[in-house]
Figure 1: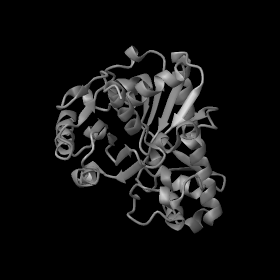
Figure 2 (figure 1 turned 90 degrees about the horizontal axis):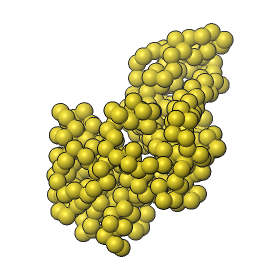
Figure 3 (figure 1 turned 180 degrees about the vertical axis):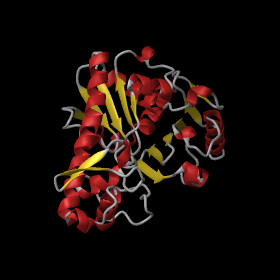
Figure 4 (figure 1 turned 90 degrees about the vertical axis):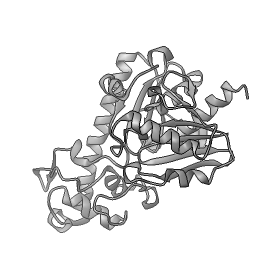
Length: 309
């Protein structure tokens, strides 16, 4: 059996050979079915978040399309919902159920802790205490409760959380244009490699250090030499990183305080980076590479348990 997580930007698959992550931007009509063909012949357990992609007129429209596309390759595929049930047809409960699959899997291993899963686009903050209180939560409700922060390691537009940056001592407003992403900042600070810069760049250029430097300088409508060259841009990146750390840490501490959890476990593409900052457990050390695609791994494990395997 394989586990599949159909996101809006990436397709993540876990099978006996390991983790497979394929860029798959659904809003650009990415070939989801063609990517899945490489895994035909397996049983499949599936979760999704891609139904929110704005190529769909509604979440149910997205759910129907994803279910139909997946079943075109895996006719007996089972889809996990936020009610803790598996389905073979499109139902509202399938919307954004990937975090719930992770919570169900982790509950027996880390009960009482706070689960923080930072992906390329969003960060899930899930108290692993009472599963019943998590069932049926929509993305809207999770945003309201602080369980979902729309901020990721790679794809977040920097002006969405940074309003001004000090340039040579002068507090300078940031342009609201989508000139640079968090991936650019992390690349400059060597938190990620060019290979790990897996999303599209804002300007369509390559994910190289030189290009990232130009994109960050553009945040204040400048070329790199206007802000002090590479050293000046690194200073800008440091300030952006401080703002990101503050945003995620405040969100985590709020839920931790309100839920009464003790201890933190971290996963996702940003898990390794934030685990030491939050004094948390890095699930990459406990679970290996599947921590980078935990919902796909988790739904596979939950399906196997349900089948009695």
